[in-house]
Picture 1 (cartoon, rainbow, N blue to C red):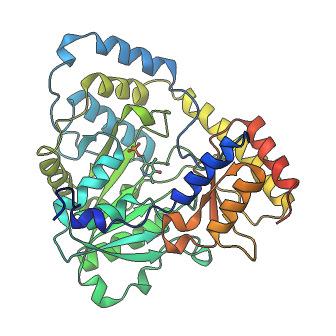
Picture 2 (cartoon, rainbow, N blue to C red):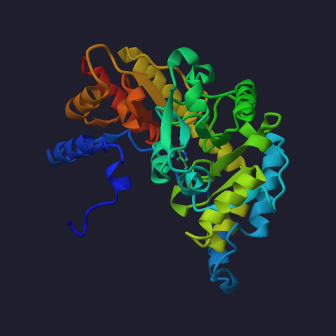
Length: 389
Ligand SMILES: *Cc1c(COP(=O)(O)O)cnc(C)c1O
């Protein structure tokens, strides 16, 4: 056997569907085309200065240079609890119901190791952030995909899950406001999820990365604000999108104490916590003036309006999202998602993400991220106008 033969779990990873786009992007760029990349789910705006200042101050303090506590600094966990109380009306015990994460992706990826046995089922939305399925598979579990359809406002239909799947299901992943569909869920839906989870002994993992990126005064709720949610679930949160801190690697999970404890037990055997200086910067972010968040929302909402108007003018079918910096757009008749993405790249120099990259259920759509300046988005619209599908 080849000494570099990969483990089965790596071989089982779904094919990387952006390979063809990546190759084509390099090729088109080498022709001298000025590419506008609308594929990037990473804020283009900088981290607010007061957060950077807090990091600088904390970084020179030698007491922060040693191993941090596994579950997070007391001050960080208290700040999270205060923020949840103020923002969502959810009460949390900072000692037992909060854990710091090296970005929420880290926590989501490790979570199935704590609660999914080989052969167990995870209920995973589709299309979705790929981590839910891949982490389930790494733990030896099987994903049952719950399609997110436009006729259901991109919410999973819990009644459509077969009984023999439900009886094997240990966890359910959800994500609202949603990447990639930009759909939102209200408290009534979360109440329905709590009831379903309670009836069927399923642990709910809600990924709430985009709750603060919402427009026109809309305030997305926390899953934990649904009555009884804390008895069945955990919520993953991140400072990445709210404070433009994707590179800093800081997030947290909150909710059911046994779920937090299980995740913590896995993590304490894999990592050694978040650099304290970064946690202190996180405290500055959550406790500080939230004007920067309102400004961030303002920037994306103006970009959203510009882009929606432009796309609809050109004839694309797209709804105005209430949250997230994504637009989830119907692929016109006569193309697959991949064909559309290739064509747009080839002929207009625009990178968009084909929906099938988020699972087969995303076929028929493509995603645009509003992570470019308005001038670039206007330019993208101009190029689309010049180009007939
Ligand atoms: C960006 C994003 C996250 C946040 O990841 P971090 O690891 O906290 O940077 C989590 N879930 C989804 C769906 C995302 O799009």
